[in-house]
Amino acid sequence: MSPLALVTGAAHRLGKSFALTLARQGFDLILHYHSAKEEARQTQAEIESLSRTVTLIQANLTQPSEIHSLISTLPSLHILVNSAAYLPHGNVDSLSIEDWDASLDLNLRAPFLLAQGCAKKMTDGGLIVNITDVGAQKAWSRYPSYTVSKTALESLTKILARALAPKIRVNAIAPGFVLQSDIVSPEEWKRLIQRVPLKRAARTDEITSALEFLLKNEYITGQTIVVDGGYSLI
Image (cartoon, rainbow, N blue to C red):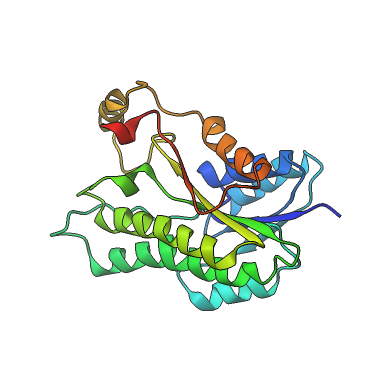
């Protein structure tokens, strides 16, 4: 039987790339999605073309009851990748309390509850990877709740790593600019990329290779791997 991995937010964008990477590494997949059902099915088909088994699970991870329901369906698990995230736009004087709560609920509370529950499914040990952001090291005034949630997620990564060792390793990957968001205009994206010391956005494989590294090196825990083209230097 192949080892099993759960990836949240796996229908598209980086979550999909992480899922495909794990499939190529020989893992069967449980793909979580919230509302992108058709995209999730497309991702499922791509992974099945690699001769891997895929199970789709729909859940709203801002609801603890749905997280607990998802976990209850899991068999023995080896890998958890917390990739689902919400990026609301709004300055500190305009961000709504609904967007604040939704961001913290999905970006921080959900990874904690998933790690808490999935650790009990990792009977033979395992690896938990939280997807943070280079923004965790910045003060992005237009994305306050997102920045706070990702900063806290890096702290949570260290806490979980210490609490779950030696059986389970917990690390984070902090991507820089890789896939343009719908809330960023092409002009703003170009301006941001020009600030990156390497003067380009990352390729998705340059981000997912960090996951491959964490799979292979079993002496790393409690760390955040930053893959940002040098953006954190400015």
